[in-house]
Image 1 (cartoon, rainbow, N blue to C red):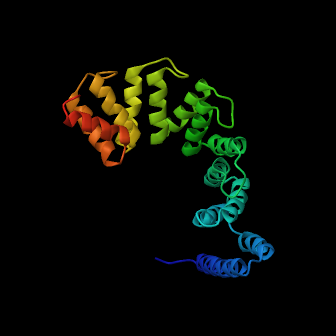
Image 2: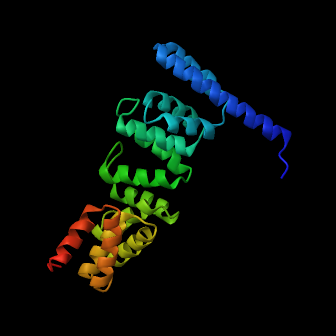
Image 3: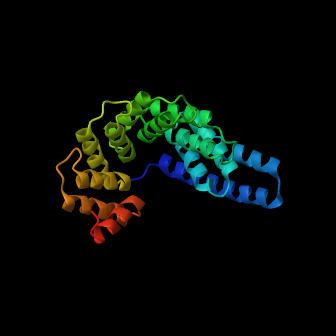
Length: 239
C-alpha cells in the first residue's frame, strides 16, 4: 500500500509536535513555571485539529485536570462533541474548574444538539434530577429517547425506568421491559438487574424465575449490588 508524501509529512510533524510538547510540559512543571506551562500549552496545541487536542486532554485528565480543561475547552469551542461532554464532566465534578452544574449542562447540551448520544443521555439525567437545569421529567424522557434511539445503553435503561415509573411518559411496564432488554443485551448491568426483577415479579413480561435468575447472574457478574442481593435471596429460597 502506497502512503502519500503529504501523509508521511503530517505524521512526522504530529509525532515531533507531541514529543516536543511533552518534554516542554514536563520541564515547565518540574520547574514550577506555571506561566511557562500555560505558554507551552498554547503553543503546543495551537495548530492541532480538535480531535487531537481532545485526545491530549483526555490523556492528562487524571493527573493534570487544569491542563485537561484547557485542551477540552479548545476542542469544545471548535465543535468537538466528545470534548464538549468531557468539559461538561469537568464542571460537573469540579475537576480543574470550580463545580458548576449549569455550565456542565450547557456543554452537554451543545454536544447533545449535535446528536452525540452520551450527551443526550447526560441531558436526560440533568433534567431528571434538576441538576444545572430545571427539573422536567418530560424533557428528561425526550433526551433519553434520543440517545436510546441511537443504541446508547444507558439512555435505553433510563428510558425504561421512566416508563416503569410513569415519569414524563405514560406508565407502561411492557415498554419498560422492552427498553431494559435492549440495554441489557448491550451489556448494561443496571438494565440486566431491572429486567431480572421484572421477570421475577411478572411485571411487563410473563413471570419467569429462570429468566429472572439468568439476568440477575449477568448483572451480578458485573458487580451490580441489587442483582447480587437478589441472587443471595434466591439461594436461601426466599424468592
